[in-house]
Image (cartoon, rainbow, N blue to C red; front, side):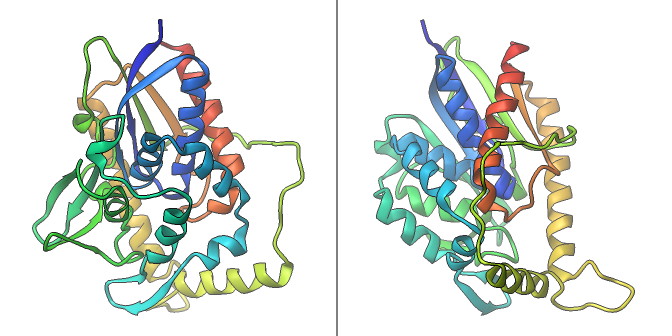
Length: 288
């Protein structure tokens, strides 16, 4: 008999690709995912899984190199954010058609933040991609998403690990994935050749990334940069909120992805990140 799971997928940038490995390993070990709640990348991966197309998404993510990831970024000159976020969703919609959340075979809810009113917003009906776009809107990076008169940003601001939002069923197992763990990270060795972009492209992309990181203001004694400062501040805040959440809501299984394992935007390392998810899931399930 399969063991039913209420799965909670946390926020954490590119580390969220590890959710793919988590889901794959749970299914491999005979678990049955009966409901999902997710924030930011947790909403993206959880939502795609609920459509039944996770393998398509996984194959696509693993095919991306650094240049591909960069080409999916639609920059904009705005005080509200650097990235529109339309290009990546357009690409995904061509692979996996949009669906209304209430028609999904698995109960799913994405969490976003109403930045104007300071409220947590639960997205459990309507367009799946609208819910994903709202939940992944990292402040200062993505433009806020206009939704029913609200300006929505990353759900991780208020609820990075939405344990209290997942639908529970009788005798299910509550499994939570925390992408901001202080756990020590051990490198993944895939023992295969990695796909590299041309050195010229890598140099060009790195130069642009450095420019973004060091944007206003920067002086000789402060090398952290405006956007890095904001991102690190937000990340630290989310980490502390996550710790408090896990203290209050004790999961049956906690899968911990080290916070220092991968950078927020290192989506071109998807193979390694997915394997990390598999490894940490195997380790966590041994304790059950």
